[in-house]
Image (cartoon, rainbow, N blue to C red; front, side, top):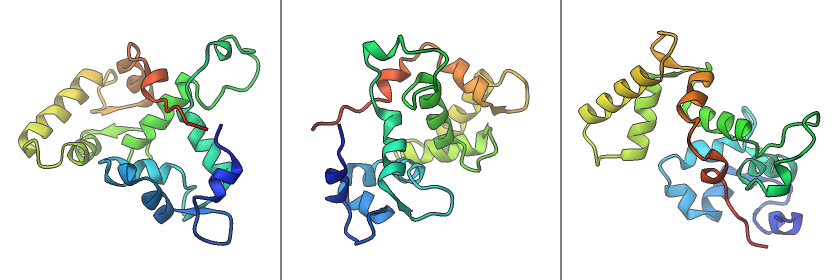
Length: 168
């Protein structure tokens, strides 16, 4: 379990919050990850440059592995942040750059460019983006909706692929 004392050891300021710079300083691997800035942005509410402990833990909860005893939780209770559905919503938001609830070919191409860098030509990346949209787009609007995104990933073990085990 990630503790408040561990959280407070991560920030530099006096106000009990983490900044974007704190994230980059704390985790060099996240800072150099092609999607690192998108992941870091997910911790910050719209327009905020600081995150408190509660907000930090709420976002981090998406990456908590689902334990066997959690799979049989009360179906009438709130859905856990680390549920498959919430993990998929989180991942979808990483691709939905302009927050219009669609992943267009241009947005997908931008993310692919971030991920591939100069290792793949622009032409190849464009071809990958076009093909991905064609295969996932079921309603013919030349974009991927959240429903289409979920359908594409229905056989992927998102619960494990989007999990991080934290050491005490």
